[in-house]
Length: 100
Image (cartoon, rainbow, N blue to C red):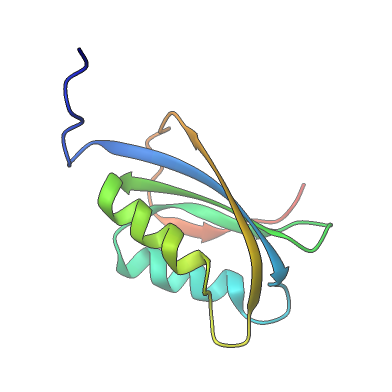
């Protein structure tokens, strides 16, 4: 039988947000919100008009940030949020990245 996961466990969520999420300040609102919440990671626009983000932190805070992604900033119109959980990499800080 597995032990319950301790609430302070560090997790990593790789998130893809679709809808009207580019040109509405979504990336910068994500940086502000994630930074205020103490999360590490990054966010960027993708060529297919989605926003991609990675959040690392405690399970509770990462899950709260994922809930925020469904709303985003006031001008956004989010249609879908896809979340993939990965092994944390120990990122520090939160930044906007550019697509290579």
